[in-house]
Amino acid sequence: MPMTPQEIANLVQGEAWAPVCEPGGETTEVLLLDVASSDIATACDVAYVQSEKDLSRLTNCRAGAVLVTRSILANARERFSGWLIGVDAPQEAFVLVMMQFRPAPARRAIGISPHAIVSETAKIGDGTNIHPAAVVGDDVVIGSNCDIHPGVVIGAGCHLGDNVTIHPSAVLYPGMKISDRVLIHAAAVIGADGFGYRFEHGAYVKIPHTGTVVLEEDVEVGAGATIDRGMIGSTVIGTGTKIDNQVMIAHNCQIGRHNAFASQVGLAGSVVTGDYVRCAGQAGIAHQLTIGEGALVGPQAGVKDDIPAKESWLGAPAEPDKQFLRTVLNTRKIPEIREQIRTMKKQIEVLTQQVTALQDLSGNAG
Image 1: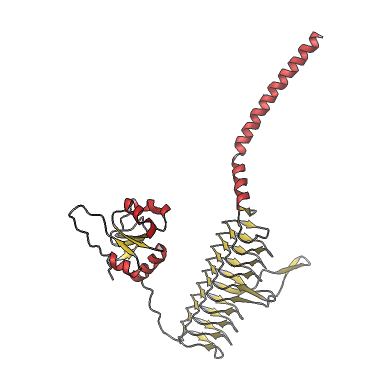
Image 2 (image 1 turned 90 degrees about the vertical axis):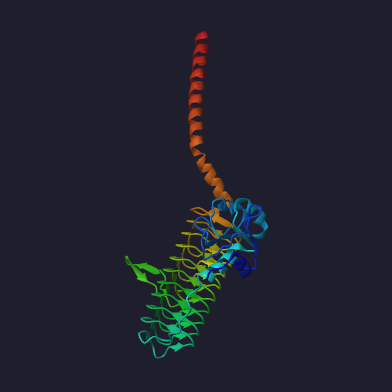
């Protein structure tokens, strides 16, 4: 449904600034139809700018209206002549507007599809949808208002809370424990055996894994991510933790609350993290390490030591960020240092020749 800038401002509890007009001119009415990023927005779109450092994006912006932080409205006007809407949190307001233009599809109530395979011993809560080709094993308990999409396999004895969503082709091995409001994306695997073997008589012998995986409330697991079961106890993912696509979390890991792991992060077995830990893409953490509360692990970092709370580590092998930056800066100076060494060697050779010549002269004089 089209909206005017003032209607947008009312929706997000913002302050609308009309375009600057020539004397005697009238403010042009604008109808907004969608959202877009500031670099590709058209006159029918709403864009946003998060902070003053991003104001340069407004120079060539053609959006019909732009959401900005209230404190930078005046500076934004110097770069953008169209409608401005001042808000406290532009990104949050932008998402609200986006969902107004692009509402989520209404949740369908299909119940248990006759084309799903559901064990007679499974217990299914009220309002839960089980789509065609899903498989629900023996003694599974699924709470209320869950959505189990096509191709999902839920092994025997799994326990799901309320409002859980599992997208197509995800697999829960037997005995998994999934708490309320967990979101599991397509092709994720929860509860495969850990990578544990003994080497005996020239061959690898599998170590049985009889533990489980616990996903606490409001956890999100990305597409293709894998979380292995504990060998004896549980691999635990703490409340509110967000796991991106293709992340690997090995057996016995204990992940704190509200962690965030970007794509292709890998955690070896028995890693422990505090709350609010963040790992950037492709970071790897060796087994049995502890990552302290609020720590940040940089992209492609290779962590082989414990990281204290609230520290940022970068590089492979990873080290504290300031130390890493010193290492990088010093490394970049190597060509200059090599050239200096060459110059010094030549100077030493010249001096050596001069000293030798002086010694010869002195000997001859004697």
